[in-house]
Image (cartoon, rainbow, N blue to C red; front, side, top):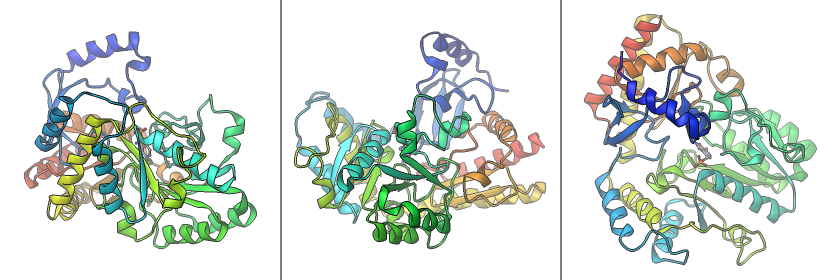
Length: 430
Ligand code: PMP
């Protein structure tokens, strides 16, 4: 068993001044039992808690740390930027570099606006879609998570799903009524709904690969089908690539599935670990944003010089690393195959989904293709698995309804350690 006495003490203290002791709900480990670990530092593939326990890290700050923690190039860029002041609130050359870099990597993005989080990106994209089309309603998919904007806390995934509160109190009935929901991966249902209300819909927003109800891939032709429906009804198609952007390829899920969104939201990796988000798309749409257009959106810290330095260093590294995505996919495939072998050896019927360096193990014997099938998972069993993995030195996302993000700092040797921990953990809980 781990010694977590200092984390325990800090958690007790934190709960006195911070709601639930955490600044984002899933961090509290509520759904997996036990108390959260307080983290002191991380380097490469390893994270260390306040009791000096070391863990191989498979969340990587929920996605951003593509190259592992405290990457030297990103660190150096940040330190350089810090010396020029932490914030100007005025235009900088780094913002142009960032915008040009994103536009050059994502073919569907002709202009881009920087914000400070994924939540801001999706809220802004939806406002723009509404302003541009003059329509109020949007469609989202059950189990997809787009941050904590009011319009998205309807059948939401991620922490909302983990906490059993996919619809949050505090969202007005009016806002909720403007968000229609559909099951992910069911094109017929989308066709049906749009045949009735297609002309009232401003935007369809989705994670092209869902990551917030565990990792769920789109069925063949699904994204193309949604694209065609949006064209038919004049709806803005928003791909929320906060997770998948620069994770699945240099041009995100759009590059992998060869479908172009009208608007794309980005976050996580583009900040290299700093609080950054962005939304971008076709020129004519983006020029509807203030100060050229009428849709208002702003931010004191947007395009912050330190955040831009981190993001640019990250994107430069992505551009310059040969074979990065192949390497990430290969190491994750090794982990997937190892996990599958363990499941087979132990006679356990659980399901796994993987694409590139995103992977989830679902404690259910059903194929997981949408919110309903994800909900068939034995979450109590996942909690036990999570704690056993910690005991065996591997830090997972503390929820069944999250994806693991494998970083480029996971070597074959570390992958084999993860596979060994998985075997021990699965054995211990059955
Ligand atoms: N969209 C997606 C697909 C996400 O996964 C997340 C966060 N996990 C968000 C939006 C919200 O981003 P943030 O937490 O930076 O506000």
